[in-house]
Every structure is written in structure tokens, then in C-alpha cells.
Amino acid sequence: MSLQVKKYVLIGAGPASVRAAETLRKADPNCSITMIGLERESPYSRMALPYYLSGMIEETGTHLRKTAGHFEDLKIQHVHAKVSRVDSAQYTVSLDNGDCYHYDKLLIATGSRPANSPFPGADNDGVVNCWTLEDGRQILASLKPGAKVALLGAGFVASIIIEAMLKKGVDLTVMMGRTGRMVSRMMDETAGDMIKSWCEAKGVSTILPASIASIEAGPALKRDDGSLTQFDLIIVATGVYSNIEFLAGSGVETDNGILVDAGLNTNVEGIYAAGDVAQGLDFSTGGQSVHAIQPTAVDHGRIAAINMMGGSASYKGSLSMNVLDTSGLVSTSFGSWGGVDGGETATMLDKDNYKYIRLNFKGDLLVGAITVGRTESIGVLRGLIQSAVPLGEWKEKLIADPTLIMKAYLAQSMDVARGN
Image (cartoon, rainbow, N blue to C red):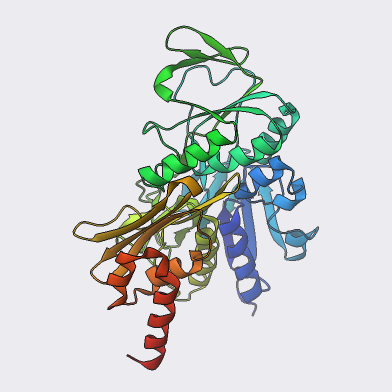
């Protein structure tokens, strides 16, 4: 009597699904694995797109797995289609092409999509997002040295795009966020203003969204005074939304993303969520957040797969973690980078040399940090925050001089090793 073959369906074809599929296959050579992706591409990393645009890597360099036939060799069926409906009662996934897949366990890793432009006229020719590999191809076809490019947005992805644009020698104009500073969702005012100043010193022009009325044919930006500024290309990078609309009627509970527990389980038996679409445990706050970074997606995929097979893996929570290279200026933020109620903060600023460090404490624990122009302590900051090691006397030393972070880490690590 043969054992029934387990059927696993994975919606999405990004880092979370790829890791989940490989984990499932390694554990069970005979199970059925179907990975459904909307794009007709080999699974790739969106975070690699700016490096593709800059010429640092070829198109194949964006691929998550470089070996030809990787998924076929693992007998992972990669279907190119859009999921229209999940029927959790019947354990089925319906596609827009009419196909239907039955599952024993389902992983939803549908990621995000670009937010709509805040201005009318985004459907004009010459206006593109920078989200898919096809977007990247379209952008590259339009880029020539001296081309006038407007980048609408100044968040994480936009800041990486800036480097690609400068390497291509374009005349770049960047629209700031509503706060008037760059990367306001991962940097305080001091750090954001430093990154803006750095970009302007590189020849980037900056404008505020309040000065823009619409996008016109050309393409062009129409200012609030009625004047038009023509561009060769307008790139929209004004944020993202989780892809959860197709779950209407499925019973899966959603908020900003899909709500999951520490095992990446949704509220519906047999359905899991991972990656940018999963709203799970936040290491810093203890609440639930969407952390759209690739390392989190990969961890999610592995843990979800283990639990889909009946295991009991648990995710300890996502640490808000950003490492950004903006045309040579490296900035980072970790954990509660904006500080916590009742906590203390230590800062050191060298504005002329673009160096800044901010440490945030809760009691004698380091709970958050920001750095600009300081790359020597990135791993140390992450380690101290995640390990929640009491700093003891080193807290006061760090408040006096935040650059002593490496010495504090070594001293406290030795204390832990001694059992102190």
C-alpha cells in the first residue's frame, strides 16, 4: 500500500517561496510542489534590480538560483499565472487561466506591489515603476548619459536607485517624501538630512511633493504654479502594498499583511504566510509588523516549510534592519531606531564628514541604533540588540562616547562567556 503524496502549493515565486520549496523537497523527495508566480521570469531578487540598472550585474545576476534547470531538477513545478481565489474549505487555489490546484498545505508568499502614484497622469508614456525585471529592462532602454530623469520617492528602494542613475550619468531630480527628508521610515531627521545633502553634493536636484500638481504627457511634471518640467523618464517609487486582495472570502485574517503566529501559521488550518506579505512578530515591539527585507523572507520560507511538514519551528521575531548604500554613503538603522518611551539616547555627529551614530537604550539594554558613514560596527549593533545583553557599566560609557560600541560588545560577550 503506497503512501499518499503530499501536495504543497506555494503562491509567489520570490525568496520565501524558493527557500520553502527547496526545504520541502530536501525533506520529502516524493511530495508534489507547485510554485505559482505572476511573472514569466526565473525567480529573482527585487533588491538586485538597482544593481542591474547600474550595470554592476547582468540580468541573470538578479536570479535567486543561477543554475539552469534548477527548479526542474528538483521537480518543483513553476506555474506562471495569477491566483484569483483561495477556497480554504475545499483546499483549492484557482488561477485566472481557469486552472485549479488542490493542496494539503498552502504557503502564501505573494509579496508586495508598488503603490499608485500620488499624482494623476501616471499612466502616461515614459512613466514607469522600478519593481519588476521587465520594469528594469524598460528603464535601461531609456537611460542615456545626460538624460533627464525624475525619481518620485525617497525611500529605501528609491535611495538605491539613485546610485544606479548617477552611475549612468543622468540628470536626476528626486522628489522627497511628505516629511521633506529622505528615508523617513528608517532614519531620523539628522540622518535623513545628511543623506539628502550627500545626494545634492553629487549633483542630484530635490523637490517637494507639495510643488507637484500632476504628471503630464511628455512625460513632464506640472508644478503647482502651472509650469512644466520635461523629462525623458519618470520613475515612480512611492511605496508598496501587500498583495492580499485575492484572499477575500478565504477566511484568512489580514491587516497590513497576512496575520501569522510564530510558526507562520495563519488563522486558517493548513495555510501559512511568509515574506513581505506576512505580518508577524516584531522583535522590538512584541506586536505584529510587516518587515519587507530579503533575509526575513528567506527565514520565513524555511520555518514555514518545516511547519507545513508537521514540524514545530518557531520564528523569534523580525528585527527592523536596514543597510543602505546611497551612492557610496552607507547608512543603517536597527530595532527601535527612533527611541522608546522613557529610554535614553546617545548621539555623535560629524556633519562635515558625513558621520553620525545614534544609540537608543531601554534600561541598560541597547534597543535601537542609526549610523551614517560608519560601517565598522554594523554587525555589532545588530548583535547587541538581538541578544538583549545587559550593558551594565558600559551603558554610561556609550552615552559619553557611542563610538565605543565594539569595546562594549567584546566586554559584554566575555562576561556572558564567563557566566557573569
